[in-house]
Structure formats: C-alpha cells, structure tokens
Length: 264
Image (cartoon, rainbow, N blue to C red):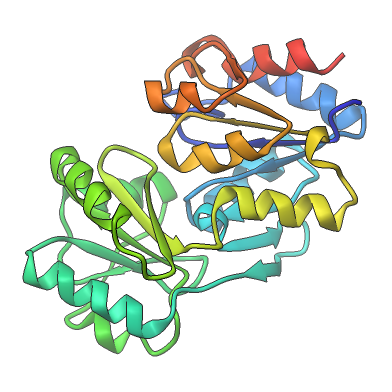
C-alpha cells in the first residue's frame, strides 16, 4: 500500500540550522506532490512562518501548528480544527511560573504570543517565527479566553527538569520539548499524532498510508502513530528509538533521503 500523506516537522527536520530548505528536499517535495501525495507541515510554530514554507514549497496539505492544537488550510487561511487549554488550568500554570520565576509565553491565536518576562529564549522564539514579542504587565488580563498553547522558555537544564515535573501532572495537558530551550504545553488531545489522525480521517487516508518525519520529543507521538515513522539523523536517542527508520541529518537532506527510499 502506497503513501498518501507525509507529515514533516519544520525545525531540525525540513530546514537546516541556517533555516534553508535544500534543493534536494525541494525536489523531493515537488515529486511527491506531483504524484498526488499530500504533504503537511506539522510544527509547534506560529501560523505565518508555517504558511510561508507551505506556500513556498507548493504543499497541498493543511498546516498543523502548536503541536496539533490548530489545523489551518493555508490556501484559504480557514481554521479547520482547534483544541484549547481550559483557562483555569492555564492560569494555574501562569501562577506556577511566577512562583518559580520562570519565563512563560502565552499563545491566544495563531499569529503572535504574549509574555510578562521576555528573555533571550523568548527573543529566539520571536526570531524563529518572525514576529514581535507582545510584552504585557499581567498575562491574566490576556487570558480572557482559553489559550491554544503555553510555553516555558528557559535554559535547557531548567526545561529538562520542567519536562519531568509536568510529565507527572495529570491535568488533561501534555508538555513536550520542541527545542532544548522550549517546553510546550497543549491540550492532551492536541498532539501531532492527534492532528495527523484528524487529517487522515478527513481525507480518507489509512494509518498505514501515512509517513511522519521529525527530530524532537514533540514529534514522537506522530512518529509512533504513522504507518512509517522516520527520525532524523540529528534526533536524540529517545526519538530514534520511537521510529521505524532513521534517515540522514537535516544537514544532509534527510527528508529527501526518506522520501526517495519509501516513495517509489
């Protein structure tokens, strides 16, 4: 049975460390789209940069942002699906961040984020997403509705400890790292795997007809769920252990190598 849907993470997977999509990867994506295989970008990023890559590469699949909390048709900008964090739980996490002097970003919509305490890591997030940081005095005033995502932005050692702490908390939420400096918190049913299931069902695609490619802990759910789960060569050991296949690193056209191997 052939592949009909390919889900690709952006940072550490689709793009190189200097944020390029290599010519070989571009050609591989043109090839599969030309054969009628849908390609979706699945990321923790904001929508504008996800859409930018999807349009630039001529991809037909919807954009998945915030780990799976929102799915958008980038051709029309229509939100197809969203799943938010209950406001009371978001406020609890905000208060936890204040008690422990931790920087927290809050994402209410798909276009920007808010913070009370900008630091070098929130600046990195803004640079990756090509947006300006929205600095506010009181994030509780921003949380007038359920947010899509919360994200701790701290030193990697702190993030590692927070990931362990929040993995033990059962609040209907899930916390996963996307970059070593970022711990992203979303609704427990808003993982990349949940988003892939939704897309597959919408387009009548079977699980075994899906390939997922990623490099970080937040990619593990979709790598494990897909019929063919691919870890990048630059992924850490935990991600590689979850995969059916380990491709080359993102600096060596790893996405293209996997596509060339599995799409005949």
